[in-house]
Image 1 (cartoon, rainbow, N blue to C red):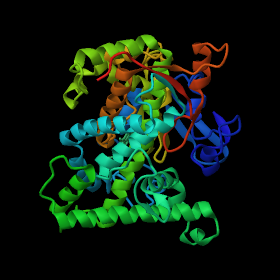
Image 2 (image 1 turned 180 degrees about the horizontal axis):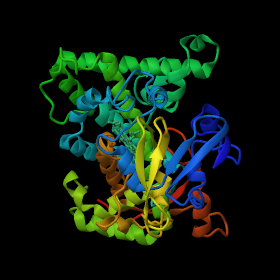
Image 3 (image 1 turned 60 degrees about the horizontal axis):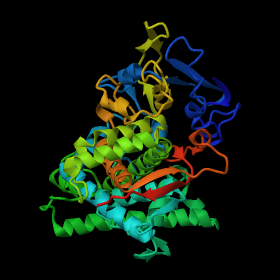
Image 4 (image 1 turned 180 degrees about the vertical axis):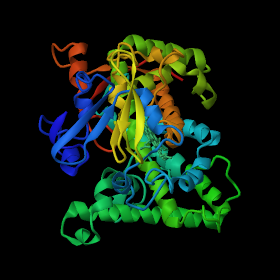
Length: 484
Ligand code: HEM
C-alpha cells in the first residue's frame, strides 16, 4: 500500500486515513483488502515522500517469532519517548533498561489485586446506577456507552492502581486549581504525546488548552509524589489488599541501595503509565462488546444463563465465580478481537534475520529481514484472517470455549506481554456480568432502521486515540424481572 507519508511519520499517523494518507488506523480502515494481493501474510505500507516503510503482518506465527523470548527485535526509541512524558517506565523502555521496571511493577499484579478489583467493580456499578438515577427505572437510554465504560475503567484503575477513590459524581471531591482529580487524569492521559514532545516554554504562551494540560500534569505528578511520601511515612509492612502502587513501592523499598531500585521519578512514571495503558484500552473493548451483544440477543441470553448457573441466587457474583464465567470472558475476548483497542505492536529488527511467513498456499516462506526493518503486528489483520479465525466477521463468543482456537494475541506475547492482561479480563468480566444480570440491551434504532443496518453503521463509527474504538453510541437498557 503506497501513500504520500508512511504511517511512521507525524503527518502519516496524525492526519486522517484517506487514499493519500494511511492514518493511525490504516489496518482497521483497509482490513478487508490489505492482505488480499500479497502472496504471504505480510504486506508493506510505504510513504513516497516521508517516513520509514512499515511491514504489516496478519500472521500469529510471525507475531510469536518477533515477540518471543530472545528474538532479535526491540521497540523504537522514538515511540518509547512518545509515551514517557514523566520519564522511562515499564512500557517506555528499550530491552536493556526494561527488566528493572518489569521487576518493580510485577509484584503489584497478584491474586489479592484481582479480588479487590472485582469488589470495587461491584461497588462502582451500584454507585453508577444510583448517581445516574437508573436503579429504579424499568428502562432507560444509556446515551453514551463508551463514556460510561471509560468512567468505569478510570475509577477502577485509580482505586486498584493507586488507591485513589473517585466518586461517580465527578462534582464531588477536592478541586485543585479548579480541576477535579478525574479531569487531571483525563486531560493528561488524552494528551500524552503532546506532553512528551512540547518544549517547556510553550506552556507560557496564552493558549488555555496548553495551560490546562500543564496544570493537569503537574497536579497529577504532585498527587503521585504525595502518595509515595505518605506510604513512606506509613511504612510498607501491610500489603494485604493494597493497590498496585503500594505494592510497587513496597517491592522497590526492598531494592533500596541496589542498582535495580527505581528513582521517585521512575516510580511516578510507571504509575502514570498504568493509568494510560489500563484505561482506554479496556474501556473501548467493553463498549464494543456491549454494542455487539446488543445486536445478538441470543448471545446475551446465553451469557445471562451462565451467570444464573454460576452465582448464588440473590447475591452479587464473587471473585471465585470469575473462572467459571467462561462464556462472559468469551464475549469480552470476541469484542476485543473484532475491535482491537491496541491496533498494533511495533518492533524493529536489531540485526539481519529471517522470518518464516505463512504463504497463501499453506507453505512457510523464509523472508530475509534487514537490520532496522520495522514491523507492525496487526491485530485487525490477525482478527479478520479467516485461516486463523473462521467466519471472522461474525460475533461468536463461543469460539473462545474451543481449546483449538488460536489464543488471543491482542495483549501481545512473550516476555513483554501486557502485564495488565488479567486485570483487563477480570474488570471486563465483572462489568459485563453485572449489566447482563440486570438488563437486556438493544440498539436505539431510527424509524424504519433494522438491527443489521444499525450494526453496519456502528461497526465503522470508530476513532483512533489512546485506545482505538467506538465513538459515542446509545443503547436502550431494559431491567430484567430478576435482580440481586
Ligand atoms: C483490553 C485491554 C488491554 C490491551 C488490549 C492491552 C494491550 C497491550 C499490548 C499489545 C501491550 C504490548 C505493547 C508493546 O510491547 O509494544 C501491552 C503492554 C502493557 N500493558 Fe496492556 N493492554 C490492556 C490493558 C492493560 C491494563 C488494564 C494495564 C494495567 C493495569 C496494562 C498495562 C500494560 C503495561 C504496564 C504494559 C507494558 C509491559 C512491558 O513492556 O513489560 N494494560 N498491553
